[in-house]
Length: 192
Image (cartoon, rainbow, N blue to C red; front, side, top):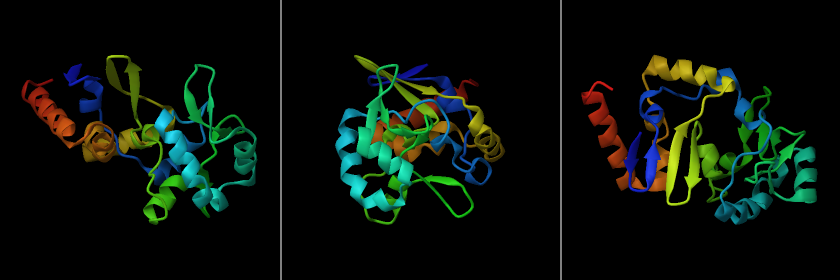
């Protein structure tokens, strides 16, 4: 573990390799699991504001869930998460013509229709952020649906923290990320 400010970072975030391979996984992370994506409290309003922009891209089932319970709910562990369809699919999931999944929020952002990218937990995946009061912990999450991303990351020799540079800066800032890079360089020099 290394610590930068009030954030403890697992060594796996610096050493493990990862590069999303949507051609192989087809966005399975949006539709697998037993709960929605973790959402920060300040993101709820942003999700609700983006809803009219993405509404037509959502499935009828997703619209029904949102009308019934909203864009988020509290899961069995007490965490705020995106609402889901059929106990697994995120309500913001869309499908392309080939059946692959993608995020309606990200689509709207990339098209310049929305200023909200997507929940930071999605943007940071496979890093999970644990909140422990006075500090946060960044851990690398291993999930079978991301096996192709691990293989591609190894092939391209791309560490998790470099793959996630943009969302790490979004969450913690550029100066924090520069310190993370320096820590990774020091670990590499030490042969760790």
